Image 1: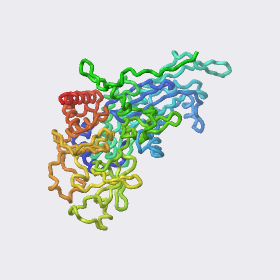
Image 2 (image 1 turned 135 degrees about the vertical axis):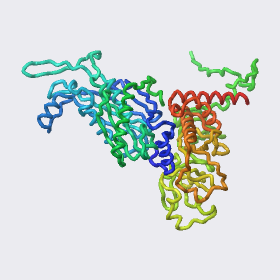
Image 3 (image 1 turned 30 degrees about the vertical axis):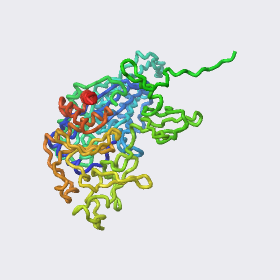
Image 4 (image 1 turned 30 degrees about the horizontal axis):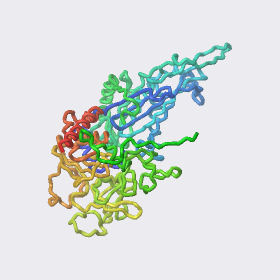
Length: 293
Length: 315
């Protein structure tokens, strides 16, 4: 059960430990916990993945692709022509009440909204990675809509990083059915879905989907991958999303504290370095759904 | 043709209870038949016994049609004379008088504090139940009531003793001993309450130089060793909000012990001071932060089990 209160003495202990590069569980400031990632768990979804960070945070992501109409109402003509030729991504993040007592009832509404908006902005944006043009079936009329649903099953700090890792893995696992287009002449176009499962293709562009690194500012230092007690002593958090080419795809700051300009530069640079390493070797262990309980 | 049903004959003879076969072994199956459900592990919905002579206690209910006792929780069956109860393995802390618990202050109200002790309800700590600075026997004044946050504020961790229960089921604590009170210089680990066994004392000092306070409600405090005697403790300083300086090697040892306790709780092993000491020795093979990995935890817990079986076989 994640605590929502922390004593001044515990906070002081954590602060001094971070200063000394030795956190409460022995990690250094820039050490991540062990990642256990698994894909293909949900057979009814087009793609799915589950990630556990250490023995704590657990996020399950399911991806479903569905036919929908292109949404161009109310946009200007230039934007409309671009949008007419693309599919889109709809995200939804939910923190389940079983994850922590603070998520019971309406407690999770704020954090759900924040996480949903964050994911939505990154994946629908120009650096989202996914090839949205390929998701268009009939320009202006029909397209694939990718519904990404993330469920936070357990909370032990650092939801954002886990969420992005799981989403990327779920998108890796996603298979899009093939649409066969029939030209009926006179500009009329119709399409059919191929029945053959073998013809389903992996969603294009999954490898360019960014993952995030969250840095928490505590005192005058910053750490990655905070535990719940460390998050309670955090003044401000910086999430940086980087893709495999090393390009920064998004930055978001949360928390009520402030980050000085020089510290900001340093933090972004460090997150960039961490991300490079993580992109190169993503640890994957096939253990089964209940293995890491 | 009439059909006659025969009841199955028991596979053993119930006469001579302590038969020994040629190796000198006693057939345990025979003895178990007499109280055939005691210490049995049951799951929700499992029938404990069909014998209606027993009364049902916590964790059981009666199935009307078959008049059999059924367990409603997952746990171990316990029997006291005619009363059957099931003690669940994974449950909230239910206290007994005299237990040491570690709690976190959630609320400061009129003349009392509300303390979270991992139980179904928050416990109550009365202002009259704590040590007031300026002498143990000082009476509380009105100034004390107005300055309750000077003693304990929201979020503070403290060690207290379970005093008793009120009529409505809420429990009350007291810290009337100088060894109880605010916890400092360390970090907290939360484990399931069933894993902490009751023993003579809950304040242990490990040979590696850290103090471990085992709260029976599953909260465990690991801290730097405080070498002060109880008489030397300054009553004024017990409510201070300052930590003593903790050097790096002590910090590392505290982190290592925390990770060991975490590994033991993940594998659902009992937590006592000897077991923590075994786990600590076994964990020295790995650097502290590697103890968070699954394989390191497996190694530590198998080593502990091995040592325990060796110790038991000696006795």
